[in-house]
Amino acid sequence: MKRISTNMPNNDMSYYMRLREWKMNELQNKMAGQTRLKNLRDDPVAAGHATRYQSKIVRLERFVDNISKIRGDLSLAEGNIRSGVDILQRIRELTVQGANGIYDDQQMAFMGEEVDQLLREMVEIANSVDGKGNFIFSGHRSKIEPFRISTGRVEGSRDAEVIASVQYVGDNGRNRGEVDETATLDFRLPGNYVFWAERQQIYSSVESLNYRAQSDSLIAIDGVEIQLREGDNIYAVIDKINASEAPVKARLDPVENALTVEGTFPHQIWPEDRRGTVLQDLGIIARGAESPPLNVADSAAAYGGSVFDMIMTVRNGMYENDLHRIGGDGLRGIDDAIEALTAHLAEIGSKDARLQVTQQRLEYERPEYISFLAKEADLDITEAITNLKMLEFTHQAATGTAARIIRPTLLDFLR
Image 1 (cartoon, helix red, strand yellow):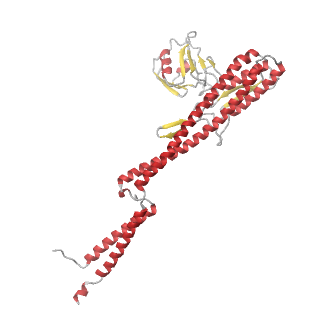
Image 2 (cartoon, rainbow, N blue to C red; image 1 turned 180 degrees about the vertical axis):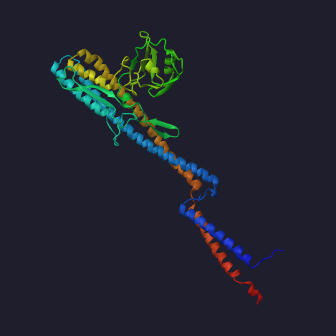
Image 3 (tube, one colour; image 1 turned 135 degrees about the horizontal axis):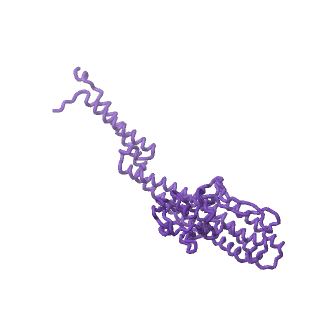
């Protein structure tokens, strides 16, 4: 037999009314936040899916922003390189014209003056900056002017100082941006790649047949690290360099029995001793030298010049009215320079085409993941309003019922 006290209906009614008020509060909060997952306990599985979808959407937005920035930087670099190609085309016209042999010394000197001015403009292009004041072609050293010039007098320049040499003082870093899950793309081309016309070769003069590495060492060529072991001889060093991903080929010079390193495409080779002194011992880089590119040993011979070297060859040939130099080495060098810059334009174009496709795919994926998130976390506002109205109606009914039932007390029955 169940005993019913005076307080029991009051307590039960109070409990259920408070429970209904709590449900109404929860539903109102969900409506205000436009989500059905106010707390993780509301639906743990859906909350887990929603968290992953939100993370994916944020990453997609970041990838799209990265792509937009990268495409802008590539477009800026492309415009400068195209200007460089136009300059080289004009220099080629002057080179062919000057190689005809129909002009006197004064006329050739005038053409040389024009080439010198075009050379200065080419240097300005190579040292161009972006909207943030960063140098475009300096690699990771974006605040350092990548190409440093030295002026002097050359034969036939009519006692006027002209550019005598152009040295690259940036680095070979390539800034990379994340454009998709596990996918990155480099978008900053260092100047010692872009403005290089010939494949560089470094010939050591140190006899190396009896060489042995004195300790475990680490060298780097063009940023690619190569591990060497204690006791490695010259043939092991050559084999490890050639087996690496560095864009160079090493061999033993049969005349000097010394190490020779040659690039596989036009660029300035970047040799480093990161641990040990292997390349210093082999005569490739100078002892105690600073970081590349100005660290090639004085005893080594380096061949393969930059775009600026090719232009200076033509200019100096015009100053001296040396037809063989103009029509031979000069014309060949300008053609090599045009080919190198055109190759980089093609590289930029292919990267931009890839980024455009990637951007279109990401922009298609984003609404899909937003839809997935909505299915897991969004609140059905129509259903929520209906449920809230039902709770309000039942709450009013329960309140009215309680008012009628709880009103009599024990004293009313004792009268």
